[in-house]
Length: 497
Ligand code: SF4
Image (cartoon, rainbow, N blue to C red):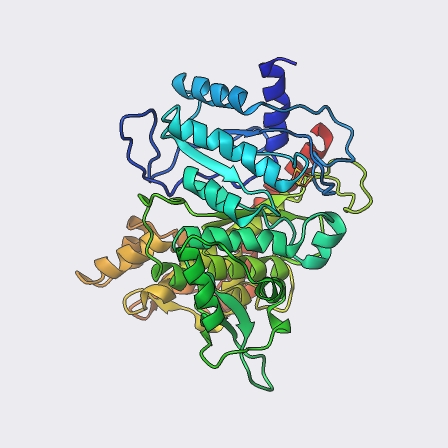
């Protein structure tokens, strides 16, 4: 099989991995080839909507594991091939010199055992950095179950290393990806968090009775401090009992009792990130770690998925959680027989995730309406606003920045512009449009110095007109059309794949 045939197979097999955005690194080129820029590498999107900015390729699609959602699983009858490390190094350098790519995302099926596979991936990365003096962006996948030493070694050569969380519960992981365990995933995540200078937290539940207690981030115990010291001394060590409790807490925070009186209330992801300075020029793992969850291959609700994602952001400082709609890959009875990948659900989860990271929402707020799943017709912010109409209208001339962020149609930039502009003069609906507020959405939720930003209807017409007194009419008006765009695509995808 020649190289182009291998690329066709191995790049196609890698397309299911969505966790490939490239921003976050700013390593300086010291006389080699290539650059890794803070602003990220240019992205392009393949016909099926997946990011192909990098040379996203597998070292091999042969795999000893049998994850039911994966096209490369052991039991799937497909053509198998692989690169030798030198072959892949040559390919990356050739593509880079021709300006085809600006970096690479390297992953692999499990070649015998996780450590052997990890060693081969590291060999490619290390040779690129040392012999070829390649300064471009490198993202390596850590193979679940790899030893801590190898995960740490991968972090030395790559801008980003990621471990895929794969499924939103330990039960589904056992049923669908039987060779993987929560500990084999959370352990490397913890190593990577420490490698990037973040001390992992333990999630737990506050003591108390009656109303549900707040979830907490537990302070580092003396035992964990000792563990940290060992890391710092270079002797990587893990505490198995810690790994087990941690896995339980990540998936099911309510099942864990608080063990420490030093615990404190859980911050939002946005708050936690503000407190965590980043150094994109750091020599170790400058772009941090990411992870990916497969959506629709197991029965968990959007609530389960979002709670887990929030936990990962808070406990391990994961930079991004990617949601990958499960692409049906044959008739494996362990996964549901979907007509096509749930693209609409994936889209809504990304929108909700955005609310964590940039709008100050908590997972419990995004789904505070009793339903375990996100609204298919409305984006999660509009859906939240409609469930919380008592908080509106918000007055743009007096509201706090965080209150403004919660108004549909106002983003972080426009909220900041409002705060600055109102220092000069009181804002009017006309001026809001000019500073970037999407008035089509925002007008129903805003007022300017007490005057509603939409035309106040005559009292008799108020019942029918869309307003915060008429949520049904408002709902009809706020639909973003994603369902009519994505549902037909789901069907098309199922016919073409
Ligand atoms: S370990 Fe599982 S997800 Fe990864 S390539 Fe093998 S079968 Fe696919």
